[in-house]
Amino acid sequence: MSEQKVTHLTPHDNRQPYGVGHNLIVRNEGIPFDAGLVEDIRINLSAVERRVASLKGRRTVKKDWQAAWLLKAISCIDLTTLSGDDTPGRVRRLCAKAKAPIRADLVEALGVADKNITVGAVCVYHEMVATAVEALTGTNIPVAAVSTGFPAGLSPFHLRLAEIQESVAAGAKEIDIVITRRHVLTSNWQALYEEVKAFRDACGDAHIKAILATGELGSASKVAKASMVAMMAGADFIKTSTGMEKVNATQPVSLIMMRAIRDYYERTGFKIGYKPAGGISTAKDAVQYLIMVKEELGTDWLDPDLFRFGASRLLTDIERQLEHFVTGRYSAAHRHPMG
Ligand SMILES: O=C[C@H](O)COP(=O)(O)O
Image (tube, rainbow, N blue to C red; front, side):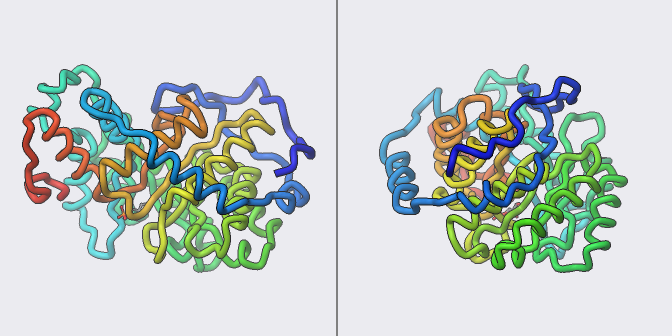
């Protein structure tokens, strides 16, 4: 990306910090739309693939370190259920797991009882927000709602705005919006900017995670451009996928999005969060993502304020790996409540 066209370098003094993690994050205000900045973005896909391959080959973490990374991963999970057959009972069970993600005997054996480890958030459809909010009362775990006509995002625009407002009124602290893929496929960056900005305004104090549906955007450079436009429009997080596309989170796409975040940070001083989502189900994958975050964005991003996994099954495998760490044995996945 070209280094010129810096439009907004100095964070304002009067902005409010926020967060459930350890960072005091100054919320992204967005910057004016800058077509030139977007058009100048270029991606060298083979270089991206080489970098991802080098990350996979080079790093392994073992024993205590692995357990520590896995506990960190748990704190960054948006524990998700997004099914047509979701019921209040299922959502309450999910919330119970969100509050106590690791079996009590394992927590004891790991010596982390005082850490009060929970997941980063619970992510549900709008219909289930009130149930989740009630089930999480007394905790700091936010409820994230997928709104705006998830997953296709093709309902009438005024209804998408209304859905955000209703989710916020029901108690959602985070709104995972879906962008109109058409705006990306037709390179209508101004329209994408206006859309995300309108969604952000509708969110008010709730944080906005912009789902790009990267598996449907056609090219790596479109992913990078859409990432930049969403951040310019004020997204607090950029997120890969709904989990419903044919291709969801991948490591090459993650590298591209993380580098867009780094670029935006260098230009503006705003730290934007990253959320890979869809198909991330193993502890090994989780650790690889965390290592990529550390190497590409730095340790500030290893925090639920700035990094989340959107995942429905990941916690099960992490808990199994922690059990193996403690006992030397693996249990069957079905023995774990969310398995
Ligand atoms: O945003 C979260 C995703 O929908 C979860 O996808 P997953 O069920 O493949 O983990």
